[in-house]
Image: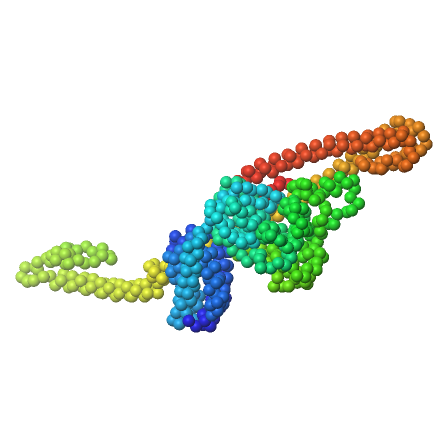
Length: 399
Length: 241
């Protein structure tokens, strides 16, 4: 296999963009109509994924040490879609037909044999990883929602009972599918450390126009079924470290960090932990009540809530009642919560930096991409070594 | 006329062997032998014309066959080679998929816009509610202060040291009068405070009750509109303006 020739051929084909993936799937479905049902109606996202994955594979084709783990993960990930060995030759045939079609005169026997060799390798590694994984883990877990609590009009906390133990490391996530949106999988982090009864919590924020999150937030009730893929993710606690810990959570990015917090709480001697929990407004601090309770119980934990889009409250405060009412803000965050006290104002990364510096800390960051990136910069400037920062943004989670 | 019963051949149809055999020539006149030459000549001319026609048609058919063969080779037109049929199917499926993708994208954009509007409504409703609550408190405060002042005026102060004038009361938890005040002063102060608080809470309760009722109606409406949309499926506007 001539890696360079393969890369050049793919670069030329990939220039034709979406049409390539469109041709590939149409070719696949014309030849194998029964495969169409394995995909969602709208295929825009699917085509992007295909081109990205192909690009990744081709770019690493001469770097097996990084290609193989990528393919192994891909192989394991595909188990939940019901992909089995028989499907691989079909996909290979359509892939070759697509590449031939878009290569035009550049398609030679040599190029064809390069692609054949590359695809055989890809299929082999993916299948082996899938088979190996099948020895220890199901293709997916069925789960039943046992509690659904709407914390705000667009945020819900769901508790799910898997049909069999779901082993994971706190901070990891699973792809989730709901019956009314078949073949749409979205990643959500478990918001708790593993429990004896195996139940897991998910914090779901409604994404306007999204296919899955509105169903989860607005239309899910106890008894509903979900499917879950295998846990993935690298935002996990470094258990070898005894440094103090910073947890920086933007909105529902709290979920994996709360799981990590529970894991830390299980240690015989927990380190000092600062948990920063940010949202646009007080209303968005959907879990503050519980976090404040934890902070009151655990001497080693400090919780710092922050809001970015609310004006700093007017200290003159009218009649006293007014301030009390104002703290209610929306649906229930005020309930017994620490009304105004301790809520910082400003963008979360700024608030973290303001409370710093943080030399000698391990930091874990999760939230919207822009917030997570800004937080990493501010943390680095506040004395946290970059290799002591682990982060995950929602963009990663939506893979 | 003494013509032979030549077959009647309509234009465009073909002389058949059977017709040829059935041709009967009239006998020649007495003293002459054989066929009537004219008739024979005429018949031969007829056969010749037919043959020319047949040869022409044969050539045309040959051309047609070649043309169709060439066409089949190119694959255009009527019967397609399997390869081309496949591309055609791929193209049609791609077009159908594009249409589906377009519809999905449109639907998503539409729900996004609806949700955005709903959020704006929600914020407007919340800020309106806050404004009303503040207004309500102001109102209660003003009325209570008036009543408290009236209560004080109703009981004439026994001494000039009693606080007088329409000063704003210190409100709940406010400090009592200055040090050295008599028990009467103290009593006045308390009466005033009680009157204030009673009126304040009364006005406040009335406002709060009517406001909560309005809110409940709002929530009912919201619930019924949510139920009317697909149960828990499509995201509709959570609030109705």
